[in-house]
Image 1 (cartoon, one colour):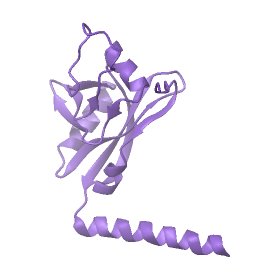
Image 2 (cartoon, one colour; image 1 turned 120 degrees about the vertical axis):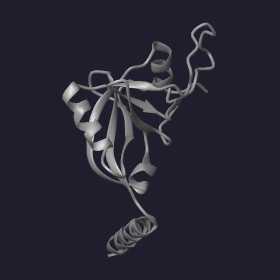
Image 3 (spheres, one colour; image 1 turned 90 degrees about the vertical axis):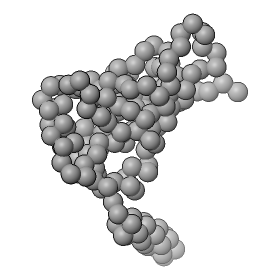
Image 4 (cartoon, one colour; image 1 turned 180 degrees about the vertical axis):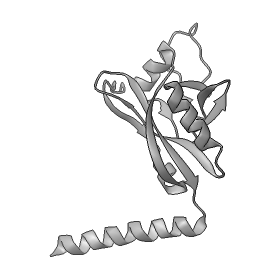
Length: 156
């Protein structure tokens, strides 16, 4: 059965990022891809769970995301599935994010990959600080309490 092509809307979400990091701020950025990579993303063959942002050569690069090749793609058009991909941002946004990256414990992680209303691929980046074990337990407790509270209220 063929996959459905995604024209607009969310392609993939990194749900683990909000569990492993306390996200302070978010920013939307474009991402530079080749045509074959974009077609693979439209088919949903992408994973951003291990993604993070690095500062290289005065640019911010998205590393750790994997875009799989389409099985029906031309063999001549090859691309590295885990290569660094450039983020498309204004210079003042890059400078602000580089300043945040230099803070102790700060990390920039991709939260979502989606197509906006104009059909452009965007990535939602979150500036986060790593959680320790106690913070993660608190998150689990809060989530369980919200679930049980909604069950109780639904029953009445």
